[in-house]
Length: 128
Image (cartoon, rainbow, N blue to C red; front, top):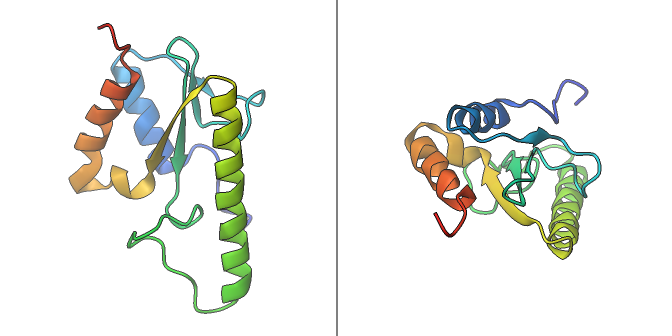
């Protein structure tokens, strides 16, 4: 597990590259915010989490498969990740941040373009 990265993952890099190409500027892994969001866009008062489907227990996703060995340990770990996610989102919302979560499966080939275009719509201010 020491080789598993929590920062600069492939899905995160896809989102970062796309947003930068569209002119959005962001801050990475802001330690001052709960959960250290992957991307923080202060200008739009929004934060983005790019979650791996396995590590964050994405329900009804083909990429979230419970391992056959040490099942109880893995489930405890994943449930704890989900609990922390929920807690961090609540804390961020209390601080008036809008939270956007993008799942790894949403960045796969067939859904990637739709997801990224939808993201730009979520980031644009309502009056534009």
